Length: 440
Ligand code: PMP
Figure 1 (tube, rainbow, N blue to C red):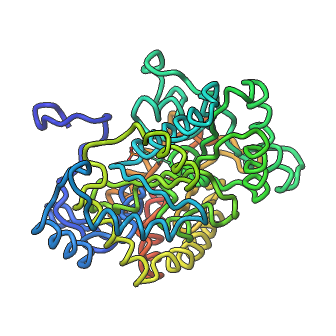
Figure 2 (cartoon, rainbow, N blue to C red):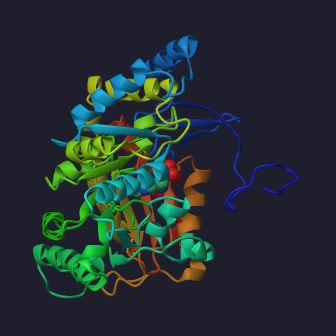
């Protein structure tokens, strides 16, 4: 799209049609063409589009009040949403702070960890170790955790770069370790990093429990999560899970951390909480951390729109809908169906080298050779070509050309969590048609 056609500017992309409306897992453009929202936008629209309950609750709230500044009023939607969320968090993480998006949630988690450490007389601790590759957001603080050339490159002097450890990309490893040992191997990299930085300077460790856009739905072996928790405890490092993408049911449990029983100290979430109905995010933290902060005078942080009643009414309705329609359970069941169906593609297309994921955070990756795990040549531009072939056929996919920090094309298949088996078959039919065209 040229600037003559629009005053908006973004990262350069294909020109796209105007969106008209959405319904369930489908989106329609102004010409009436239907698309399956195979990536829930950017893993946002977890309960599907135009949900009548959410719209009705938002309209009811709109008729009463859309904004009341938090220093002037308490509001029922924000109190009720905080109570509801606290009940869905792991034991002990029942203090909630609202924000309006994922980057804000991540930076809130960082600032909370830092201010808590200061109240504990540990002001030497300020480094937040993150993994590479990772995606934690686009604001400068979150970008320092995201790191890497792709997103952080030109901005590097504008923030204090944080130390990184390698994300577990076990499927690319060519050793003979068992899964369990591989998990430990990667987790121990955190210990090495803490030691190298000096434990008394390390404030926190942040990770996406299942990598999203960064690694393409990479899940670590069970042993990884357990060992990470142990290492953080050993060194007094605060463990932050960035559940911005994985939270709100995406991996088949309300939070991804439930899969491993590795409870972090702080959880940042966003996307699926507002589910496309409102810009909303939340940070949940251990009660004793927040209480210590409050006793010391309060949390020095806040965003104007955070916790506004309209966004919170939307979030509350989203959670009610998830509960009443058993949406998390549906995600777990349909995630298995989708995973199995995607696996069958490996028999049909030799260039599909890996299928992975948890719940409805699924991905497949293209390779030129499954044994060597070599990627397809960059010039093929496979990630964008396949996305366009699918888009033309009415299926929206989300792709990236990085995997585990090296070249490689991966595609996230992450439909709304309300999807049915028949609709998964619809996705598969379009995907096969698109892959046939790609292979031709
Ligand atoms: N963390 C993770 C894991 C994400 O996937 C994203 C968004 N892709 C963010 C943080 C940043 O969220 P936002 O774009 O809403 O600021």
